[in-house]
Image 1 (cartoon, rainbow, N blue to C red):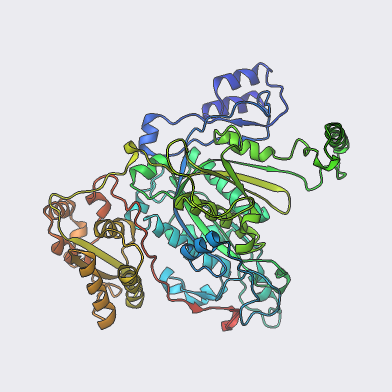
Image 2: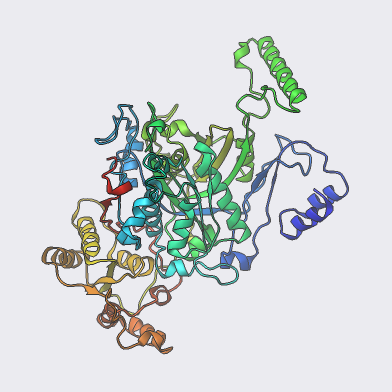
Length: 627
């Protein structure tokens, strides 16, 4: 680095004074990779949660790095506040967790309608999509890569899981006040859909073609939702999503976005992509700085403590321009290690690997402030082999999701050297950590350190309270009456089922503040979950009319244009006039429920059903497509 770059990095907070002094005086002559520890955010920055400092592993020497150097203290943590996914035999994460916990293998023959007999790990009905939910023309949707369509649906579900599709999404602002400051970082499989379309194209009969680039996977989501953070796709094969997460952490630190959506998808649509053991999947995770997540009252699945990315050549001794001396050194190092191992009484094959092996893992642990692997479970692509097979870009997101579910449930899934069971409880057991590492086919390796979230008493989110405890205002909305009825059925199934039911206040608050208000609306003022169940069942069974604002007529009194309306709504809320608020919302008045709820009024811990999709088959030329 020249003097100008050193001073620029110091100004941006990427170098401290000691590092700058070492570089400018020529003292930084080390050759090993080091971790730059980014500065702690100020109290004001932490309160505003504009960004987060993350340890970043770099290959550029700054000072004499040593493998045994003390780990850098973590400059900040990032919370995973939303997750969603669809994997072979698992339409949602509840089913995926059951498979992971039980050690289930999803290998099967291709679904009916797909050619071939290769035993693999397949999703069903990949041609189905709900264009009406996202406001996309069906003809345009038929030209969208099914990987992109699946990712749209999954990303929306992850945002809903985080309670971040309504006013709370608008409230994620950049440093300059720009709303919806959410970055999208993705990995995707090859463009098989474009290959299928190319088979039917000719000069004599040209036809519209799907987009072939992976850039559309994140860009389409950013455009549909008006997200203003970075939006980019990564392709490093199996490690793509972990590399995307690494980039997301850096963007959060730099303040380029207030939250980041990370995910990926892979489908085996072209016959050349299918082989025994290949797999499919789609998943997404929403990340926020921990300080912001706590301030927003978010539910937290786990923490991301650090990450690192690097490249390791598949064969470091292979010939290449300028590599002769380095390769010779590697061979000599291996020979010396083998001789020392044999003198110690062990077989030559037991010699430790060459120096580059494990380098990325060490840097990730240092970035996380972890001194070593003691107490850290390491998992990689092999941990999800039975669940998704060799799933390309979906491998990384499946491995991250499996690890996050283990930490969230506090139950280890079966893996190499351990049986399923519950993590030990009691004092002396600090937060559990899982280091997820995946290496791509081209040699790009990424490691991410996840940590169990253990809330402290001082970190408990505030629970909003009104002046009087009483009924709750329950709201549902959807783009069409059919979507609304299907979503209402999901909530009725939750309330009438055998599983745990969230408390009414938390359930209602999560829907008010965390879900987008769409054109077709249902609202009820209820005193308990039994009364709510009856109202939902009556709505679904009898087809009772809902507020349908698709034809216009929203907010007939024009209250949304009057500045005094906010004060009026706040007075109604404080006085508990929920029936009046219900009527105003059903009439189409936009109500900022998050502003009415006290700070921290999220829906932490309330697992709510996702909005229902009404999917239809969409394929090239109107064909049915694969199952």
